[in-house]
Length: 519
Image 1 (cartoon, one colour):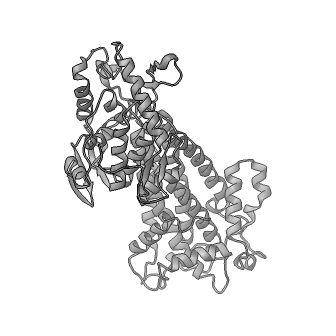
Image 2 (image 1 turned 90 degrees about the horizontal axis):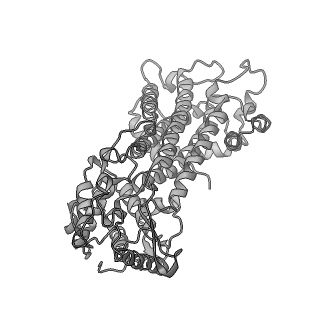
Image 3 (image 1 turned 180 degrees about the horizontal axis):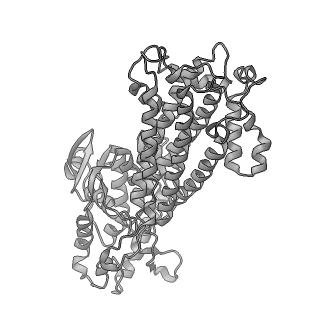
């Protein structure tokens, strides 16, 4: 039992685990900002009731998958009562077979929160003290070391969740205060003790989609900020490149009847309200139409927005689900006799398809951004008074020439990452687990894709803020000028050559920090 009560952290703003769905905002707050967590008394009572119902069924002596049998292709092997606790501990140990780099702290914290919330829904029939330990670890900053490669996204995220669960047993490794140590030492350092596993509990800890769901939730949180930043970057680019706003006319987008397209066009147009650059070239402009990267930005970004909202909905529903197997239904049976039902809620395909779709959406967001960056740096539009590469002295200075190369390289990697992991299957567990989702691979690739797309948008913002300087003394819309001012607080104007890398990092950090997200 943990020595500190996990349901009374210091903050009144703690995330309450009461069986209701988590939100993406809550996952981000706990994972990144260490918002405290507590368990509601009702959830604790429900878990205790489900556990008691399970133990009554176990006393009947029937074979119950994963409770008194082996796992996967060994499910036909009956396990003696005296070996049930050892069965669960051995399950966790044997399945901790992950390889690769350790998952980021925020991913591990997200996993722990989502797992704890799922167990609080009382369909897994674990003892409350196991979830109390998990929540106490979160609040104390004990983070298991979890390798990122190993799960196939079907019978749960088995390998990463097993590495997570090892620390609950006082085994494995954890990080506390930036120091890597044994799981037992990490628990001891914050006055917590391991909880030995009882029947079914090892299976309940590892048989879910919590690794890919944690990455998906954090990615959706980031993609919201990224898409808003991309829309504001589009507005900035329109005035930095002296493009028209005619293609933003709402009548055009109402005629197409696509909601994302309409939303993007309205958002970009709003940023340009009050621009004096737009009317300065509205008359006698020899250009008939702008390049697709401007003119079709509502259609492209709108499609990405619609796709992201669908992916986000899948993640939000998963944050209210239970992905264990078997499930215990104690409240719908007569005389308190629990129904124990085996199914496939652990299968990751709903998430895998959503994560793969999100990757593809990011390719389009970054790709059209890079094209606008290319357009202004090429300086081949005689209507725009910019110099090649926005160089203060072309030839002597290269300006932002190589920033576009970097954006192109990121876009190429995004194109490779966009290949859907969910389209492939590899059979496991001697053929019993014969169709896997590979959703954890989708999640790993999406996490990388978000980082790459953020850098591409940051490059556009950096370059276009410089391009806007060439339009002075004219001013853009209030929204664009506010964006420009925020960037300039962190990155000065380009006067002579300097390394663009720190500037790109600075702007990317603004995107990640949601500096360009409208309230």
